[in-house]
Length: 119
Image 1: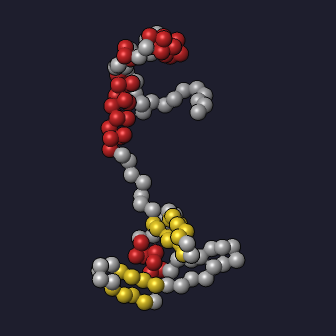
Image 2: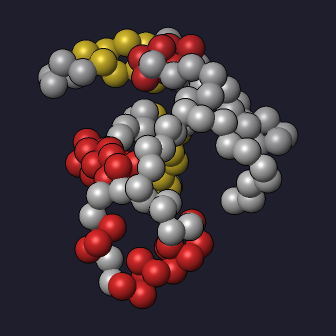
Image 3: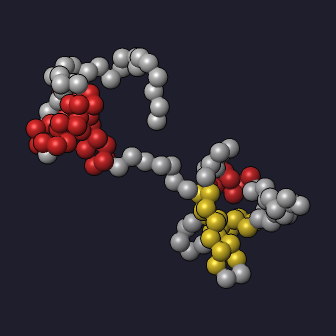
């Protein structure tokens, strides 16, 4: 194993591995540790002419703007707010599907769902 400091002060590691009959390669421990990889970590591969670039994928993160919007939407739905802003035909179909007073009662999102549910 060779460690070498580049001028940019980033760690440079060069390792070799053998391709198995199933097309698999075990990443050397020094590479896994340097990239912070664990079992189940996601990787991406890029083919660039005659070499492959392997990158550790960042953990997925939630977009704060989308999260804030979804929280606002959830609050509006549970409180029955802004239903009047929907076109009358849509409001009518909601009332038909959910009942006339569907938007006038409190909803506890932690309540158990009764009956069959299909998604």
